[in-house]
Amino acid sequence: MKTSWMTVAQMRLLVWLGAIAFVLTSCSEKNVAGGTEAESTIALYVQMADGTPASTARVRILPDKYLSSGPAENAWNETDEDGQVSFEVRNGRYTIEARNVSESMASGAVHSVALDAKSDSKVDTIKLGELSSIEGYVLLGTSPVVRVAGLDRYVVPDSTGHFVIDSLPQGSFDVQIGDPEKVHSTTVQSNAGDTLFVDGSDTSSTVKVVKSKTSAATEYPESDWSAHEALLKQIQGYAAGTLGAAGLADSAGKINKAKGEICVVTTTDDLMDVIDSSKVDSLGNYGTSVAVAAGSFRECAEKEGAVWILFEKSGSYNLRSPLRIRSNKTIDGRGRDIRITGMGVLTNESSNLIFENLTFTAPAITAHDTTSRRALSIHNRTHHVWVDHCTFEEYPLILVDVKRGSNAVTLSWNRFENAQSGILFGLEPDLFVDSAQTLTLHHNYFSNLELRGVLARRGKIHAYNNFIYDVGDAGMECSDSASCYIEGNVYNNNVPVRDYRLKIEDGSPDKATEGYVYMIDNWFGRSGEELAGDAKGYKPDYKVSVDESGAELAVRVKNEAGPR
Image (cartoon, rainbow, N blue to C red; front, side, top):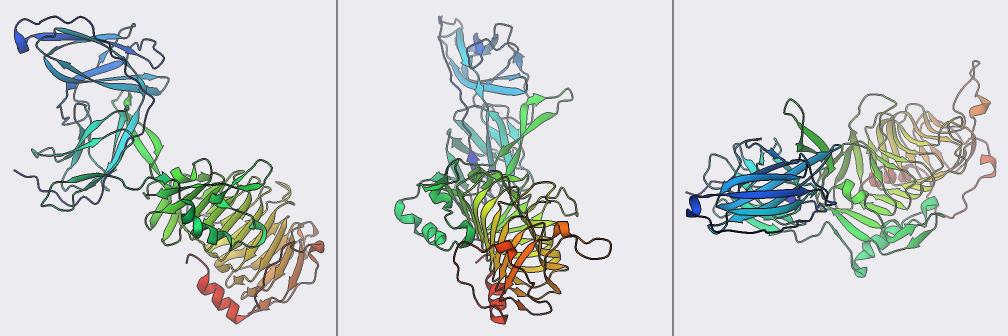
């Protein structure tokens, strides 16, 4: 009889390594009278990783062909104060599993034992080590289950087909996928460190198991970095000198060229809930932990060193918690439709970053709440950040903020839409004096914003060739001693630029919140005029080519801003 399989879209299995070692010592063996029907003794000495006895550790022994038909089917024995435990069993092959929980930390080991007619006893020593997990996806029809031969592991995938088998040590496991009512199931041999894919799309043949041909992180040959080099040539303004994955920022703020690596994002998963059956409360409920999904955007972003992050496929990458990205990264979504959803991305003294061709949308928090995450928050003295051809939309308060001493930032060819405000540059002076901050804004599109496109407080901002189409209050607000050099922009709103943040009782500007503005060659489609001022002598110390403002520029920015 042959099992009828529905399509298996793809299953990923990844075994995370634990630092674990087995020390096996065989003692005296005697002939057993009575042959295979006689019972033999297996005595175990269970030790912690440092060699000390693992007292009250839980130990279970099962036939190596055993397949669980439900959770917690077999009882555990406990070791004594010296870490010893023994079992009376018939001859055959067995799988022994040992676990220990100490101060909420779990460790374990799996060991195979074979007893034949010549053995009436066996003594082994097992050292415990860090636990790991196997995870994957499977679509097998009605009530599929995933089991590990020889262990009491019985997992029913969730509605998306995702499953996790937790609390496994390093080793090789036979993972069987199939309906428990069927005689046949598919066996997958997963060795430590392997990434396996299961192809069951052809129902007329057996399921194929193959190793991944693409490593999740691999070094690019020199000749293949041309696309990255071409990207760097497009950086203008304060972020010039940013190298992303082609450089390393030192503690002094200098960025030196370096040979980076590539990390391919292979899954839209982010953080995974893992059921830890080694942690059980008095009611029999399993504990849970959270792990970073293998092949995820978060895994790539949290790597040390220079990393060029690419995406294997288009899709929505939902962040379950804010992603604190490390320095020296290029997040490159070119050629894909990459949507970052859920919580936002934050920098924290992490510099030399490039964000290219991404859409930040659909946040987890939708109420107007000061605790809501921004789509992208560049803060805490971050420097050299280039954000290019991205879309930011639907976050309830601020889409992007640049604050707390961050500098050398350029935002170019981006769309800021459907939010309260587009960009926050600097904090209120009584919170943090951001006078050293520098920001270039060019060829960005602002639309359907409730309050303002840009709010600048302290620091220096150069804005050119942006199109502010539809905002409820001010297109740009230069306040709290910020110096703003504004040239060649197109405004289609009632208040293009305001040079203060607050008013006093008589309706006049509050002098304490005034900024310094210089405006030249801007175009006003609805109303407005150039404000008189010199930006307190500020003028950008770099050269750029500024396009002529007008309807033609507005159409170009509206059509070409955002992912390409």
